[in-house]
Length: 332
Ligand code: SF4
Image 1: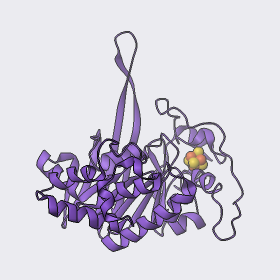
Image 2: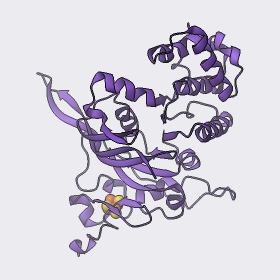
Image 3: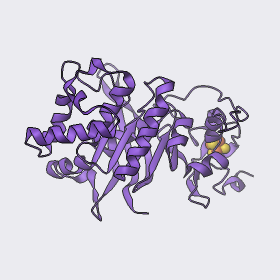
């Protein structure tokens, strides 16, 4: 599989200021040594509770935020380029190929501007100077998301939430990107509309041969959309596997707990529910050792003191947990 993104040891720290002199007293490690790859034409799901770093990861992939350390290699026609080191011009060209769809279709569209104007900016910026040409592209994109072409002359308030999100998707696609980063694209929508938008996204992906990075807190939605899934917790990757493998053989205790809340497809039954005790710890005061240890029902002595490593357990399945990294022996 051709790789479109290769992320190596990505870190994003936010300083925390405090005290009388407002000095830096700590830092929040929103991304703490994240490595992963995104392949051409696939959907890579990123799942985790709020504060796990998934949104920060999405923003870093687009360089909307600059990472503190690590590299993000993007495959630009066969050449891997580190976007964290790109100059303005190269970043501009890169952004033509990678677009983002955000959670809230209500605030993503300016209420006083017609849909036409919302589309116009990216098209103008990327060299479509003739109005007729821009209109033609916009209309084609509206059809792609099953909306009438002349809706581009209407205002956002004339559309429902689902329609607005489809318009945002159309806008992201109008400059023909190869990757779309979708951050909770359906979580603001009615459950009855969610499936419609997700199916449309799948359809478009095949038509345009797109890669998706699909970020969400809801594992059932991520499972439905993704070829492979990355489970994150407190800025770290806990597990990476194909969607199928992860639902059949979840190895990490955190993934097990997330999965236990997802109904089993077809039967509609739930798996045996594992209730997670306690809250996600504050990212400023991360637990020592394994970051999940204060909520883990399989916690061992070693987990409190030593960090696990992300280990390849075969079948493209990676897991970050002492149960699988061969270190239990140290404990005995
Ligand atoms: Fe649980 Fe230990 Fe594995 Fe962390 S390393 S998930 S605490 S068993």
